[in-house]
Image 1 (cartoon, helix red, strand yellow):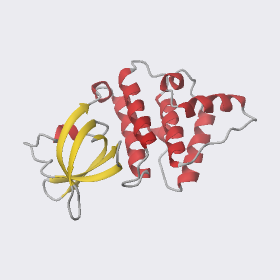
Image 2 (image 1 turned 45 degrees about the horizontal axis):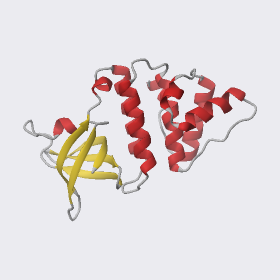
Image 3 (image 1 turned 90 degrees about the vertical axis):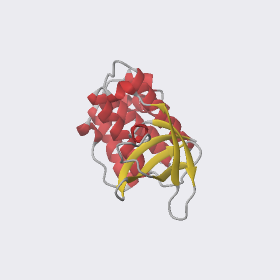
Image 4 (image 1 turned 120 degrees about the vertical axis):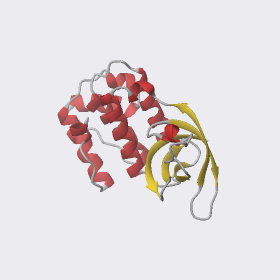
Length: 202
């Protein structure tokens, strides 16, 4: 089963709970036994924003990871501090706002394509802008579509591109802090949860 690692948290002495977004089953929280041990073969493959192929054993309380095969580690993200931070922001937000076993193939496709673009593109015009693009697409997947403000022509044009999920086109836009604030405040209003302003983190 194809999955993107969102986060990992300690559970007991040598185990961890791994949160993943899968193509088939949406978000899953799975127990990885012994993953904190130095001898664990799976630990390196379960870093956040890795793409992996997994097998699962179903348990009474927690389902277990039984096999993890690396698919994409995104080397160029991990060796670049700004890219790594941007990727961590995106998987953290995705982890926070999707529910376990809530399936939406669009979330997986958006997240995977965004990470691939970030990894493969040598020149990012604005990490803040690229994050805005993901947040707009992610919000749409959650059922919240930002409406256009006809009084702001640049907003209408930018929003059309941001909503497309075409990351190359997004990367050609110019970052606009006014548009960012519209996106950020819409995100907070619709989700009704506290989220740090990603433009201040990127």
